Length: 601
Image 1: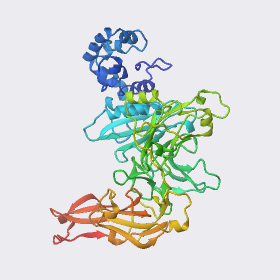
Image 2 (image 1 turned 60 degrees about the vertical axis):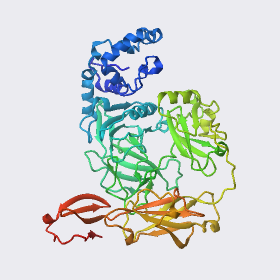
Image 3 (image 1 turned 90 degrees about the vertical axis):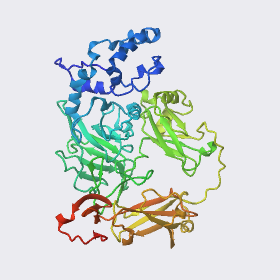
């Protein structure tokens, strides 16, 4: 399980390593006490809850003596789980662990939360631990709003940072996450709530003291540098971090591509190789299933407690990291299993214990980007061994039994061997899926619009007369100009945050007659704005009929407005959201304003 007596060279308790050992186990599932071991216990037990129910522990210890296989396994080895419960030190485990809880709170509670409860702390020593964390978080069932959880992500012991995947997990509802990222680690925040979370930077100094500070961001804007990077210096806290999007690693000398990965340095001048990485940083949710990863110039926008924005004259930056990785798996001919375009396909990476999800493309293929521990050309090591992957049309459940079954039944043909690792690509032409769907008869591909992208003018908020340039991307490579000129454009202006499911039948659906072609310029008209609420402008590009899945959404809201409310008060509305209220008498405003609205343009 874990030890309570890690000692330093002076024979004193070494609190950091001991605390890390404890919380690497304490709030995760107690696998040795579940039904699979023959003790008929529910899977809800964590190590902590098992040890806290001391009377139940002793009863289970007695039961185990009648199960000779179980008893011999856990009473005759060094990993003597059940005999632990007879030790007096576990009669009050909360008191026993209190010094280590105090150490964790003293060292890591440097942000919004002043202290964390014993049952709300998790330590991840490697990215493979994310699987067990996901299971533990799913089984919490927090009902109290914003329960504070502390998740500590240590630097992985992998050989190279390029071979190290990201820490990735999904935030459960009713929680506030404080995520500590140690120098050298990578964090994927795509599953994290941008408002109910914070990120802390941690490192060990020359005397092995742990230094932790909250990341707040910068008041200054990020500007494009001559070396094709976006950079800003943190100036909101006691430290001076460097926030930077580096030049894309695979681009040539003449390329202007910038990486979507945010790197944060604590001391870039003296330690150019010491940093943390944040993947999928600028997360902006528009509707239930519509998420943008684009960093704009809004200086008021905060992501995970970090204030970061671009200069007004800088092109919005794409922070989507779904295609980042050092290895590519391409699955083809998915129509043979009845899977259609826009269906989902899942890949389980047995090496890193991570599940990836991708949308099937128009050519009935799906591409996954993995981060594997890849060998060099002449290297002789375990990295040359094959890595298993599992392909499925349904998501694999996040529980120990499903994952164990999935790994055990992994198709032997889907082993990524040394040659594939050196090529950094693995192509699967027959996915061997278990599905009852009838194979699709493929037809010649009809030209259609698959997505709408921004060419210019992308912003978090717009003003009247602003202009935005959009471009339609088609499902065929290099279609003729005549074909692209058949692209039609339409729009819907509504106050609903959710995109209309049947655009052409919507009462506000308007075709921009006379405007066809690959690009479309939108002018933000003053009449699009509503003083009292936020409007949404959904723009569609299509060949035959508009699709709800092919649109772009522009958020239309006044920067600042005043609205008279009941009880003689004014509501101050900022970008469509009420920020405060004031009494009319206190403001010395004439009361005769009922039915009138004043606003600032």
